Length: 586
Image (cartoon, rainbow, N blue to C red; front, top):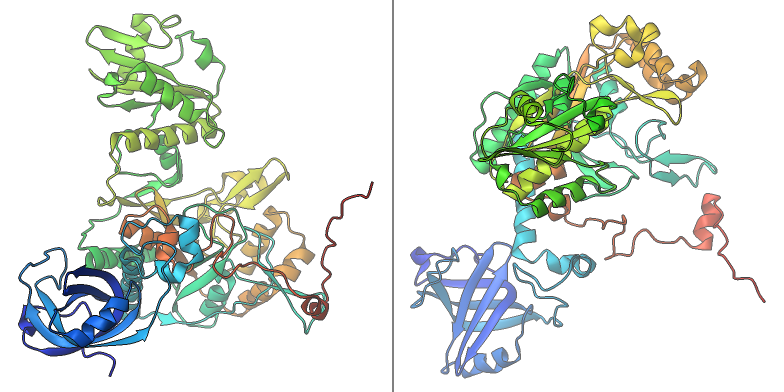
């Protein structure tokens, strides 16, 4: 056998035991005739030692270098100089035999916890990067989270069902990845952005409780929390109301956090979407930070301040203890909100100093008017008020981003503190000025609130969705809704979205047809599995928890993907390669 135990298993209780280990050379230290070699495998590191009396071993060890693959046989003994940083740090193996299983070139970067390789280089050699403890531990952590998800859902009577990867393209949502069919020239499959319609069909089929930890695909712009292919925990239940679903999956999240991190949650608060936007400027508020947005629209009356008089909305955040901020620090916040990706125009600030209230608008606002604002915003001694005016939703969003930026600078966003909540009662539809039509805020199969059904014809923009998002620390970890299961309501939804009857039939006729055969009331939720793992592990990037992630351009630089097809492949698929540009000859 290659090994009798792993490199992470040995303890003082194993002293005197003859063992065989196998792994990679992590470090090698030659001190005269003494050789100390750290052997590493998936489970840990064990120190091996050989002395001057072992001349046969010394000859082999003179050649051995980092990342060689070895098999080592020897006796476990207690270390004279222990290493408390290693679980195996109390023992070492006194070598009797070494066998070289494979040699290694010098790696292009150091395989240490803190590597000297940049991200692009490490992604090019991802198989080497995985040998590093942080990446290896992240993948083990992901495995453990997934194991607990399955354990919980299996215990709750859910059935794991696989759904197709080759489906038809849908007109809503992000761009699809498409796959040409060689057997059906000119026709294309699409890779699923979600198994949404299939899990609804499973409910029509009587499965009752379904789940799947499933790969999904979206051809969209990438960020730290997005990948073109990602994994979600996809779930659906029949004969449920919203309360049933929230209780079920709040229970799942409690179970996962308790079992994996030892973190206990009390009941998750529920916050309507309107309240979330008004108080936090976001539909995924981070409750680790107090500092809610204060609506100053009423108090602005009589201030006669031009910057506030002509705008739809005025709001502010109160930074406790922020009066200590220097002018330079405030200017940095002004520069932050003026960034194009933030979209603000500026900040009006006010400090509550010992000498009184001081503001960037002292020219326009008397001390009495400043006091009215301070009282309305809850400004106390030593606080800083940051105010903005503008269009309602845009200004709320900018204030929400500013709130988080202040919290980051103050160090208030502890990754080991978790604040969950449910955001509920989203708008059903959102209007797009460019295309002059409504789009579903979640997806076209979301059930409206029963009392809002009459608004389909008169005021669809005012309708509320029976939708809910689970948010933890400002991260949307999951979202779902009760589904439309009535054929007539689904037809109304398609009309509100601007689909003709013919278009709805072509795209979703199979679902509408299924509703003719006794579809049960049902609803569900999907959790971003990569995002959940990153949140629980304290990372801002989901790439840390994916074995072979894509870069920000959607490329896998290790296998050079996406790549070109040969002319023969293109011809077989009935596709034509766009001719390359040729410079004009002079």
